[in-house]
Amino acid sequence: MIKSLKLKLSKDRFMFAELVKRDFKTKYKGSMLGMLWSVISPLITLLVMSVIFSRFFGNKIEHYTIYLFCGNILFSYFNDATNYGMTSLLWNAHIFTKINVPKYLFLFAKNVQAMINFGLTLCVFFIFCAIDGVPFTWKYVFLIYPICMMILLNLGIGLILSALHVFFRDVAHLWPIFSMLLMYASAIFYDVRQFEPAFQKLFLCNPVYQNIKYFRLIVLDGTIPSVWYHLMMLGTVLLFLAVGGIIYYRYNWRFLYYV
Image 1 (cartoon, rainbow, N blue to C red):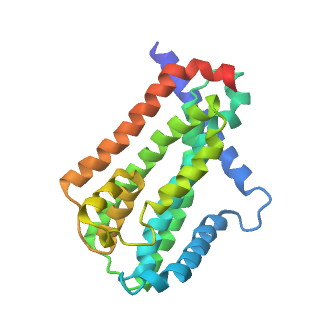
Image 2: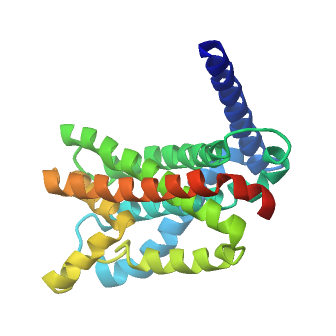
Image 3: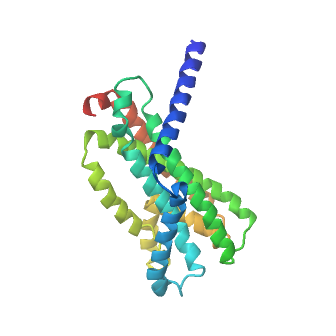
């Protein structure tokens, strides 16, 4: 039995590695700049947003470009990962309808692609911090926490979206609309402190904003969030993972009949 389990794990690892390679090659096939687009795209977005919004908020927020960059890279990562994840099952239906393979591997492979893009952009973010004179402190080590939370959050929401997309194709049209509304509710280009204290707390219901705020507290304020804040983020992530895991566990066999 142990031998059989080891063989299965070995096959799953091989399948996962091949899926990651395939998705990576497919995305940049025929592109002259290749992976550079992962950096160029968010930088262009940052430039446009900076030009538009710095006139209204730039004088009120110190290091506004970095403030904007924090929100932009984290939301872009969330948006890419969830959009890739949402279609992961349908795009790979020709595989899991023919061979027995854990279906969550397709979602995980898509998330690796989004993680690589995020990692490259994060390097550029730190360069911008140095150019803008933002001090680097030992507290930057704590950025590992929101990054891990974002990875798990994207997986949890990806599990939910990919399953719903199999049963309801309209999800592919509804999610971009919801994602756009979520972006405006993530305080990417404005400061939530301009609102009433009671209203500010509503922003914490947005899991993406939770991570954006954490990043800004560490990078711009040099402050480590409270233990309560860490637990709130962890609880939010576990909730999405639990819901996504339950959906996959209960309806896993039904995917075959809807793809």
